[in-house]
Image (tube, rainbow over all chains, first blue to last red):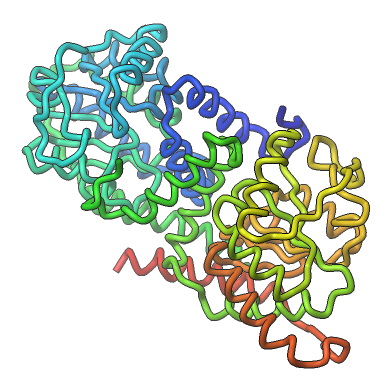
Length: 243
Length: 243
């Protein structure tokens, strides 16, 4: 039990939620540590959606709505943190949702798919194959899912996989709190924001866009600006601590 | 298995080591996330001991050698990461080593004490009592250990406990990668460095000091300077990414 008078109550409660999912095999131990890394960068962001992150979220919605075959790639952490948010984004964007794991076992895939289904996600499963140009289990995905996609949203992705997807000519939208990570730098579009803040903003933007004609949608943006602005926000916050 | 060609192989292997300790109940799930937070700040430090951290380590050695009753307070993460390093520091400084946990169970205390003993630590155990001014299990410690100490080294400490120890008039030396944390700000002396780099440096400095007369040792330092310099290092590294 975390005492309610603890100043970091909310953050510790989120960790406890991930810890419960770790006990069930949904979140890997490595995933718990990765979450901690994210917490540190979120702290430097002031735990809020910055203006440039909001702009990135609007852009992500436009990319998803303009796509022919959009896919949301879900791992253990994103399922544990944002299953309901992902279900809502799927309804708004019409994207496939496919589970892809760094630490891949049939049992884990099954647990995560059930968690997502319980939250209302229509999960694309079927037979996976080694289709990505990578060593390790990260190479697995489904032929009619991520392999055939033109736009992939990858929350909390591993750097190698992000680079592999980009090298296959896909537009990759990453959600990553570390603007210096390889994922953040390799992605086509990077949203530097916390997952449960980012996904509902993309969903809202999709709902607004769906009124218009998708075919007329053209999307342009400067990902270097988005990353630079995130770093600038963090630097400003750190420097402020010196005052 | 982490593939050897993964660019973050070393960092991921350390996580795996903590994960193995989590399976044995030595590291808590919250401890895994806390480790991830540390990784992020270490990344901003450039994963090296800065000049000001080295100065803090020399100062820590002087405080330990000048103390009447120095204690090293060990939790799950520090035992998992640095049991042998803690054993060496104990030999050089003559400090008591006491296990204190945020998530306290008899079984966990036992596992961690055994891990430390296997690494050559002479663990101070005995009966614990609720002696610190805190809610929660964090209040527990031993009357002839931390409660009676004049100098306590707390690697990877919780902010509340650090503040409570300072309020009891103890000199608290914290090892914490986040220079903005409450622990870092509350401690008497803060070493902003990674544990397995910091502890051997303190040990070496103790060995050099032990030749001299302890009684003539006076220690002065400016902890605000140490924290400010750590923040300056991190800000410089972040800004550098903008070039």
